[in-house]
Amino acid sequence: MGRNLDRRVEILFPVLDARLIRQVKTEVLDTCLADTAKARIMQPDGTYRRVEVKAPQAPLDSQAELIRRRQPAAART
Image (cartoon, rainbow, N blue to C red; front, side):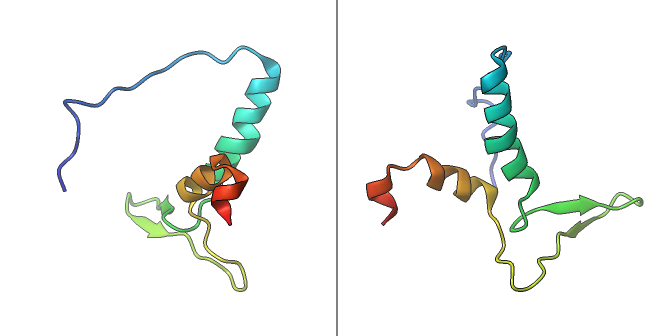
């Protein structure tokens, strides 16, 4: 798969407002860390293993979840 390394734009900026810091942590970071759909855990030997999903829990795809949360309510139905 080709990668867009020449045309991509990365932006980094400080978040200074305490309310926004909490929001980024709880809504974005915590969701990404809870991902079980595509997540891997690095092993001591440098290899990776997939995160195991324990039944009856459904896999969580963090990117799809973050997109779903930002869609207008009417588009979710």
